[in-house]
Image (cartoon, rainbow, N blue to C red):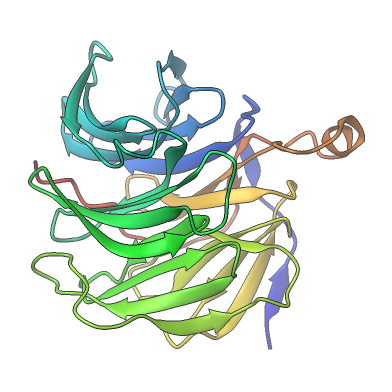
Length: 295
């Protein structure tokens, strides 16, 4: 039995992104970062001061990982770059798919070991054109191939379990992972099969108790799953296309979610003014911060 809750949260930022994605939180500066992928923008919101900044980017980007107080690693359509926080300057770090200019980065997350998993997909969302890569110390290793829309990349707090999905297939996969390296140590198995349910499995995070929080694109909800794949709660959001959640706040006890208005016609956008905004669910959570990337 799934408990269903109406939205009792708020809008954290009403800058409406075409495709809001990749939210993450920096506890050192109390700042939320996220992307407008199709708009080639990096967004920054300081929760202490409410100061908002939008940083134009020369490329489409989708994932940000902290390195230290002054540097970030970002995944883009042209590979991985180190971003200087103060200046915004980008320095090339590693190639992802130099032979696939028709692809771009999509979902990704840092493993507790300090490695990064990052997914790629066709800019036209062609079938099985993407993959998921493991990045550590500048070395890029393909770990899963033939994926159309990689999403839900996240990990158990102890780093022994990884999750991912191909949103086109709509099966949430579970795979055992080496906690010291972040590399898969077993074969993926299906944890949740929702092929016949409305909407698509999009971005996810795992809380301190090992429960997975998933933004369900096209359904206007954030679902919470137990470690054995049981959906135990569903939280409504006022945007039909939520894309990815993130734990925020100095105690990681708040949950934000990015949304998008990509593909919505004028009537649909008028009916949901929150489409593309950064939202916060008005609930208490027991989250964990995204680990830093070990460069």
